[in-house]
Image (cartoon, rainbow, N blue to C red):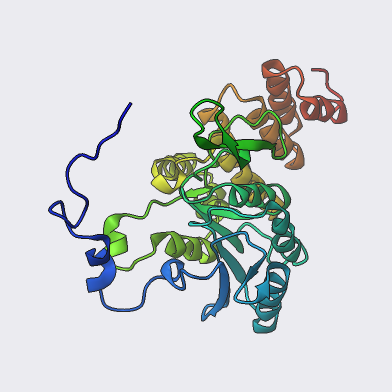
Length: 344
């Protein structure tokens, strides 16, 4: 078979040549957003005025600008310690991968700092540009840290084939790249085709043109804003379940929560209030959760625990029994019944 060119190349009658292309953001005033700055660097950091350690991580490579990967991350976090940073933002949106064995240096620096390894203080910005070794770094951060992931789903599956090798086809002599290794994360049963963010934010072409970065803006807003439990607390303390339910439905409708598990999040909000010494508010939230998810053994188990702590024995027994009815394997409910001297 013979392949022949069709038409003319770009710049020869079919649009401008590549070096004549105009970037959309070139007409907007001001500096580029951080994620677009220093594109030639594999990694760099900056301390922001609000005491945020911002790390731009574009490639998992051994050395950049004469600085070793391990040295860079040690230096970045030491600078953050010196500045008294209150949060960390790791921007990986355009990280296409590199050397998987370098990921451990970053993870170790984070887990050494439990004051920063919290869901409202450690934010990882991800998107469709995350691939290969960068995806494996996302896997490690998800498994070992309490990071909140913000942005779009990644461009790679958590379990993936990689490390392409050149192979020459015997007859055509064409040279092709074939993956030689299967990189498996922390679960062999993980069949996801991508990793989804905790907070979904999709930047638009209008954002790009205006040099806005809604992903970073959302992460910083989440860092300083009230938690879901705090948002529900006042209405829940009054026992206003209708108002709590309206807030939960608004939470469900918010596009940022597109990939969230609503039942788990409402349950976590209830425990946040319970652990803060607000049992009445927690009970209101747990009652709303069982109303929303009447087939959930876990929701009834959590309600039973809150009722037990509130000293409402009979109601706790009923909730625990309902959990066991829905799922006979609900050990925590069986244990709760035993504590209260009741049978399943």
